[in-house]
Image 1 (cartoon, rainbow, N blue to C red):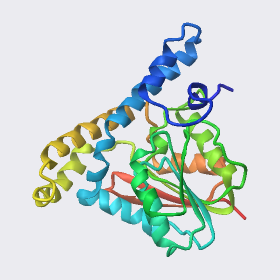
Image 2 (image 1 turned 90 degrees about the vertical axis):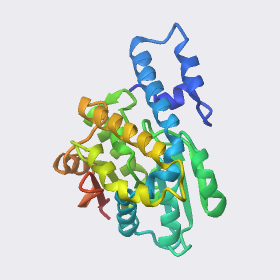
Image 3 (image 1 turned 45 degrees about the vertical axis):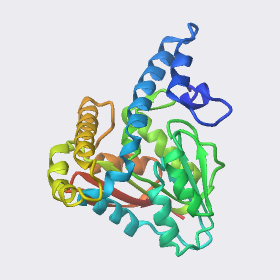
Image 4 (image 1 turned 60 degrees about the vertical axis):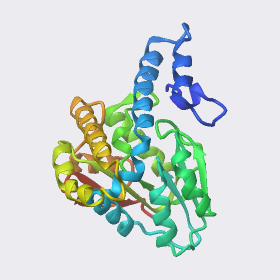
Length: 281
């Protein structure tokens, strides 16, 4: 099995920059397959890193807020539990876990390859621990570590897992979730639909954008950026670079990796799917 790119480029852990990946690609001894994987990852890293300034504006529009609201409603953390916020981004899901548990949750681990967007939230939540790491490789946690995992709009964008692409790579990701989750633990995650329409989402968010201009004067330019960002995601989904599947195919993967009690909700103007499932006791 190929080693994960994160570990290959930064074996001691810590933050990886776009320049780190480019420097890695300068090595003439890299084999063809590793060079292909690292080149794809460099493009993706730059895309997400360049988009990080959008985080504060995502929930100005109602579709985004409703999606987040359903995620919060479905998560079921209990006092004393330990949860993973996988691909935590700005740690919005960590905030929800803290609130839903009425501050009784024991520990939240926020995992991502870019952690600075989560640091403001981490400063407010004493039990939130931020950890550098990639979901595209074996996770640095022992078996049965977490009581629950939340993973919001991350899984379908992971283009490979240790050299496995498409549905094969996605299955490996869920195998890792199953490995580090305790029996009976909840996995709450979300994905865009297969034929995601950025035009529909932006159209439905426009009234909220107009109402928020006084608070956010830069919103028109941000909205345009968001539109182009969404179009790129839709294009990558159609090309197969991202794995956007119907619920029936996701359920096949969940079943193969040992998850049960799979339940779906369609939100985001029916442009995203939220799934709650569990490991059997």
